[in-house]
View 1: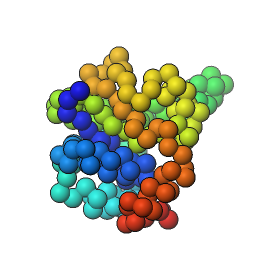
View 2: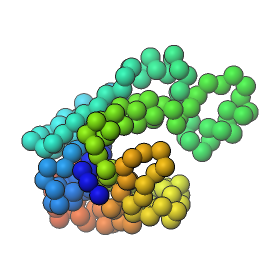
View 3: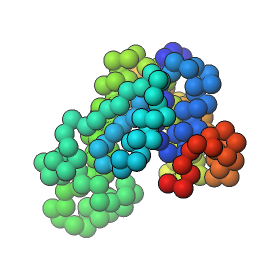
Length: 179
């Protein structure tokens, strides 16, 4: 397909996905979307595990609290319940989808476009939510969204929690499972 990018959050699933991708291409682009809301320990882990890799860290165009106050995209509701609550609460100005867009997707898209990325590799798994499960049923492991020039790949979407635990124990004993 072309140049790829692994989205890396530092979590279990993205750590597995990153290490599997590095086995295939040690020079693969690795990107972390630093919303500035995470813990220092997490960002330290991410920077430690990506040291020496082809790594890019994005940050939002504006501070999250500033964005929430000026745009009203408060992430106070889950995506599924947002519409119902907003319908029943006149004047409520919140949008969890827009929050993610401004904090993660928008800065990431600029990098992906500039780098000429053709495949974005995610560590999402079907077992994490019904929404993901149904999305994977509809789209599969690799698909091309209409609104982007790159494909999206989910190589561990079929893994169970036990698969993740076993892989980490065998292949990433340095992963801080307790966190």
